[in-house]
Image (cartoon, rainbow, N blue to C red; front, side):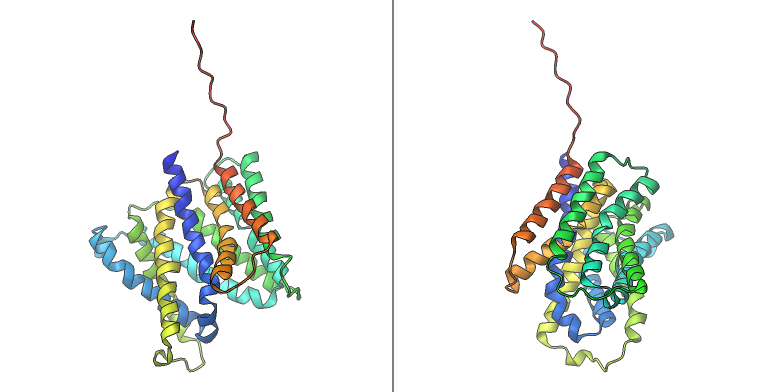
Length: 303
């Protein structure tokens, strides 16, 4: 039981850290080309984790098997590159309301995938937990979405693919076995992310030069590399094998919750009663997902 709770907490911390980064990195993302930003932050995460993987995990990188590299590559491809590409292409052509609804169904995707690929049982309890998670995101985002806009078919497809990428990361992490330890796996993902994002950064135009980076932008990129790529992946790999995939899917809904709290604490955004209600719903969904509804046998009393 304690092992499972620690797993839930680790995966939850991963997505909380990712959510906090949304308002923090917004300013830097507006002034630095997206893939250049992604490449630099992945490289920062790699620089931080590589010495730790050698000193703590005693990893011999030259002897890592092709099977392990395949698992690492899949995680980086779906968890970083494809997720980011689909999100960037989908958001401009999708209304705020539609975007919030589409991204909120990630827990449902994980539930269906875990039942099909991992043979996890789709129980009434897990379905109810998914409904709570979806409701939490819809309640939080739809009433406050000022940009109703129009949603094109391409925007809908790209955003749906982005959501599928998020769900796929959890399923692949459970499906692809690896003998590598969490810090080493996180290092490998940062390495693969650096390699995959580098060619995309070369295609960006705009005359951006590293010499023009301000100290504020540099701090944000260092923060992003450490607390969005490096540390969350360490927590993710520490926790993902201790919990069911469907439970891990519930924690994805913590991203908008933590983003909302970060905006309130650091940027003066207001927290409404709707936000509080949505937060309570997502916490309830995680509790329900892990709640053991089986009745314990009553011990016989002998006289």
